[in-house]
Image (cartoon, rainbow, N blue to C red; front, side, top):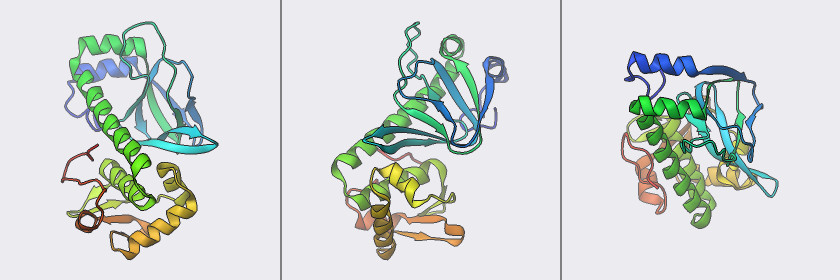
Length: 235
């Protein structure tokens, strides 16, 4: 657990307590971890694999966030009360996934004893709020190409590599996955990708990795996220 992002500097005592409370559970690819409206009152710490949080609207899946190692999800209300709030999103394993499951009650006790863990969770919530606000703004105001570019930028900052002016996404994102992440059709994603490639803002590298050219995007996309090195995308 100490190798997870954000956990490297936690004292051994805190990690030991987390491990004691943790019930490890493995989910197979495509397995639902929880459903929107469910009342489980549990927190999941992703140890290995990948999870998609999504909502369903008019028969379409809209991916809210893609989670990887070290991410928390589930009941992050921290209310400290017995009231169980229904889940806002669906959570589904996108590959074989292992998570540490902790009850909300145990987590609240842990947070009172070890504020260091609370800080990690607050950073998680801050970043998630920024991403949600950015995504909502895109869906309300931006065209398909800008929505796609911003989603690729968010994904690259969270899970990709900064090669100095070029952000690289190593995982192979299908056109359908990008459609789910942006709320547009697969056909629109294909057309938008082709146009962005033509404009030189993105390219496919060896192994179909996606590379985003930040300077080109900065100069040519008025409503795209303006990223600084080492920073999360702004809202």
